[in-house]
Image (cartoon, rainbow, N blue to C red):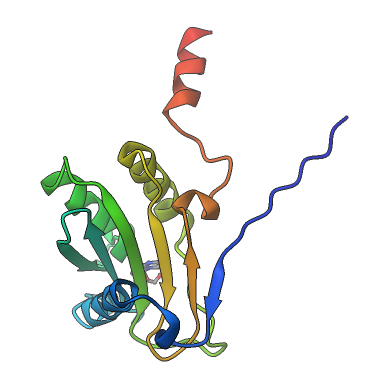
Length: 165
Ligand code: THU
């Protein structure tokens, strides 16, 4: 028997000041995008911003629906838009922010569905996507790779193994 251990590393910042100017710009773009979120049911407004390798910044937010499961999270909405319109552009970084800061000052982390979508986008990207989580007036966490939030993720290689059986 072998016991394995997974270690996740990320960097925590108390405020925006120590971020690079691009990281700061991206977090602020995500925060600003959260104000247009359509979240009348949860009242939890989330914004996301992506910077592509050509420097273009794209933003989106969560969109809810009276039939609750029809809603979509900000980051998943944005990744799908990005992969629909900028197929050849690598994603450098994604920031996710919420309109309201939570009680503990710590960032809200993406849901499981979004982690799965982020990981597949990162695999297709063929290079790591930096992940910036937080609020401009609270703590900010930076992960070097989206995979850090979903180690051992299910991916297309698993499907190939299943098909060969
Ligand atoms: N939500 C996001 O947009 N991103 C997340 O990472 C977590 C949750 C949205 C989904 C729903 O509209 C609302 O926040 C409450 O769950």
